[in-house]
Image 1 (cartoon, rainbow, N blue to C red):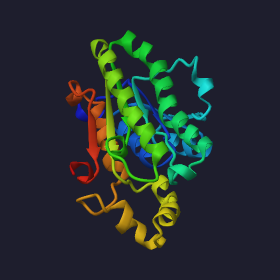
Image 2: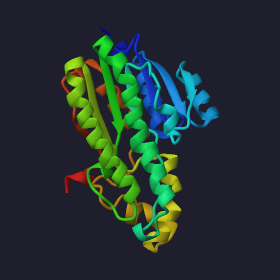
Image 3: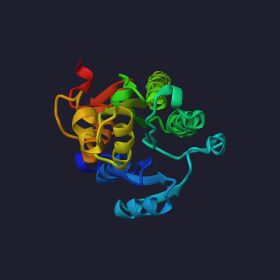
Image 4: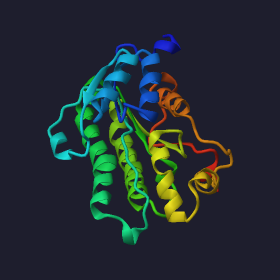
Length: 251
């Protein structure tokens, strides 16, 4: 089997696929032959990326988790990537924002895994990749909801690995540090506010201070790892957390 087309005939679903890491994952999986379903609440973004990878768009709001309760998901590869961010001290954190982050970044992945597993079990093959974060392994101040959701996603991924292993299904987390995406760009102002610094200082004094490699991760670097985890060389890789954090979590 050609390494370039090892996902021929496979159907991959990528949430938050309309931009950033999700779009990079969609491109990397499509390059290996997968038919990619680009799931995003932004219809135009989903359609644009889907057109780029010769896939299809699925316009879905993952915050509406009740709508996912009875979902049946046809996917050989599921990439749970969609996420949002809020930066605020705990005592000032909006409770509704906390709940929203848990719905999108923990509850929705659970429901999508639940919806995809029966088909994967029937075929005896499946790959689940959960886009966690270095914050799924370590904490940072002012990110209580995000850190809590990512730690929960790590646990969900490991349970899925244990249950899915006998059925040919692997489940892993990918744990980037700060990636050059709109999600990171949008938190610059909030980071400056809570740390009491100028926005121009955020990259050096906040985002890259823990990383041994002083640059942002590129989305394509994450996408390539996701594609590898879906490939034949990773058949025995499951229940693991793969850091792409420039050495942040090595401390």
